[in-house]
Image (cartoon, rainbow, N blue to C red; front, side, top):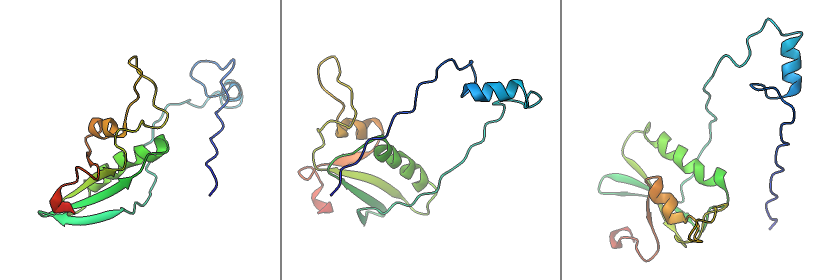
Length: 144
C-alpha cells in the first residue's frame, strides 16, 4: 500500500498589495479592470459529497450511524464529520453520528504540543465537537 504524499505548501505572498490575492490581480485592477469592483461579493457554495457509514442500527427509535476509527489522518478527514452531522439535520427521522475509537486517547494528526507536553486526543476532539464516542470497552452492552 502506498503512503500518502503530503501536499506542497502554497508559496508565501511577497510584495502583494493589501486586499489583493496577487501582484498580477492588483496590476490588472489598476489597468484593464479599473472600472470593475474588486472582492465586492461573497457567494456561498456547497460541494456535494456522499458518506457511507461503517455501521448502522436503529436503537430506541433513533438511527445510530457508527463510525469505527482507528485514527484520523488529517484535518480534511476529521472536519468532514462535522459537515456530515450538519447534513443529517436535513434528513427525515432521527440520526446520530457516533464514533467507536480504537485508541481514543491517541493524539490527533498535526496536534500541537500543549504547555504540559500533551496533545489533543481523538476523545477530546469528539467531546469538543459534541460527538458521542465509545471505545470497545465502553460500548453499551445493548449495542453489541
